[in-house]
Picture (cartoon, each protein chain N blue to C red):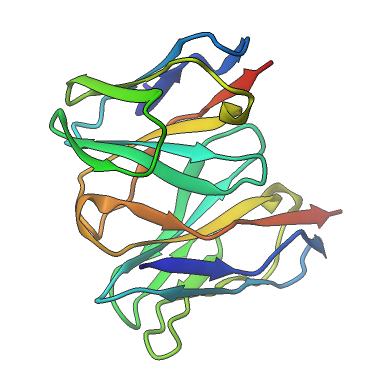
Length: 112
Length: 113
């Protein structure tokens, strides 16, 4: 079956540091890949997505590239802010009906 | 206007009770979902409906029964609540296609005491 593996947290960074969260997946066919973010006490929001190999998704300074050869979709941001503190989920949709398969989530804490 | 709204936001109840969570979306989507987030933040799909028809039913106890009166609404009824049902339940909707994202509600934090 499909699965998503992402690095465990918490990840603690200082403001303006570089952030990388690793995400790898297992899927048959050609899944679509997503990063969702969950701020404290809130629901999930789409951060970015990529729907085919070599696509780069980007939003709010975050980027991730769909790498089929390494089955990866790592999330990066060049300079984090305190407001980026949240839980980040890597996810895929690999079959019909848009069912999301999530990774375990990575908590990111950014300190001033 | 909230795209996906679910009520209530918090629900505290005793073991053995029956409770319902309601969800509504105004995005015109055909497909709606219930996801469960456990205490370690892990998210797993429970059910999905497409145009009022059940299309995904993961391994969930029979005490959980979804109902979709129309394609804009998806409710979750839970009978005989147990301590292990304590979690955050998220409703979501999407077009149902592989390359489009889902929109999530704010979640319902269910605490069974």
